[in-house]
Figure (cartoon, rainbow, N blue to C red):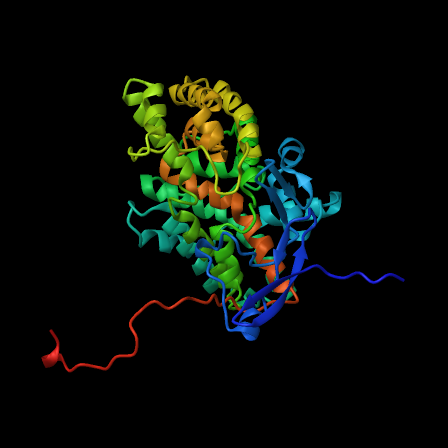
Length: 433
């Protein structure tokens, strides 16, 4: 029987050395295990933004930014977008496998049956101004759900977690639609259990008691695909937030509420809104695309070409290829001419042939086309990030569940390098300058 020697790296500091085990992932990615670094050497690592730090082991999502690969539980995102549904993909992420027919039926029916909100939740909406951003409303209402379901808050009780998962996936579209209705002064529309997940959401958004809305299957399918493409994306800002909050043993509602707040930031979930605003500016400026290409290449110009490049992808974002196909289909179904799409496609064509963008690996990302699709669906700008949150919800839940099952589970507690004043003394107020 042979003996396998585990690969290590050696770090030496002031004559103290430590062997750092090399941990390896499924696809050969490697990392240094520094869990004993401080105890052995007194050192910690300094990594602003945690761009070089692996915070956990995870078997949920694999992302290869160099090759433009995205896998959910090993299944390529292209296959899921073509063949799966959002609820089936949610099941895959959370439970680790595609559901069989009975599991899929039970899960889907359970989500449908939990889509209504407690009537008292409506009182919450009456207390917020119509100008409230929907993300603020969604975060607050999700957090408040813990007060309505105090019997299902234990993170280590499997039944509590199960029912909370179903409630969250079912109710977030209703919460989101209500936040929109509040902002425009229209009555809330109850969910319709006869509809699929996306058709139900669109109906709650656009129906009124005097005029029923019927979601076109092409539109509902495009929204379903958008949700699939956003469902998880490894250890991003909002996912890391959900994990960090959850590591304190906070309940699932509180953790997801925190994730929504993190997603609200314009550097994270607001990028597709920024794309639309950029295309609008170019359109209003006469559609001079070359002018804005030149501005993007000028290092002294603050203008940035939104929707190009990604923190992780150094190749085509595989999600953008999928959305480009759906984009024209939605526009054809809606029967509208979209000048923003024309500008976007010309931008993409020029950028992909320009040495500057090729050298910097600035390829279109998922935000480049998602905003155009939302706009064609008549989704208002301030709801773009809310739709992102609905799509990302299963990934947040899956990551939260995985963290609690991790044998290495512990509360998150990053270190710091202190750069403030040395020890001083308290000065009475009359002596202060």
